[in-house]
Length: 213
Image 1 (cartoon, rainbow, N blue to C red):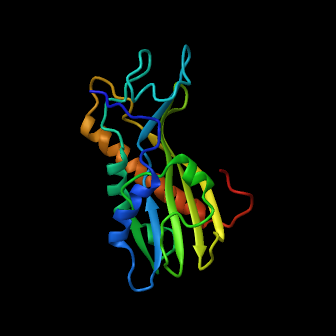
Image 2: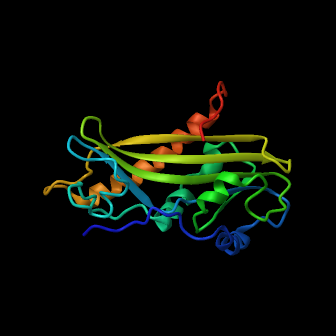
């Protein structure tokens, strides 16, 4: 069975706030707000066709079907909660608050102030922007993710803004008739977790050039 995934980012950002409020700090602690992405997209480059976004996840004719449960928003929330992000991002004093809805594309790209209505004395944001299953007939398959990070510290505007793509090699997708689909789904989830770690590693490196957006 092939799961259909919309390429549109899910839900208005206001929908995130009630879930966040339940976990918000009440003792003046710093906060790390974490948002999942809208779901899994796909792109394929082959010899006779390619380039159509979501050909695999929507089962388009001529594209290799992904045929595995995609990493939807709910899956990402679960994985982000178990990622120990404040430790990976070197924000040990920050309380992590994982939102349950994805941000709109416009909001995450244009917002200058804090996205969450937080009055925490110090504040940071970690955002999953776009998640892609990428297959190339030469290079193979990868899970590729665009992450965004903003650290406001104690200021009204972010003191640091960083975004970059990460990618992790996949060996079980797209599946063949003999593929263990349970193992393939586990590989996809593990790749998401590894991509988070790759982003944290990139963030920790000294900044030499302007970050990509």
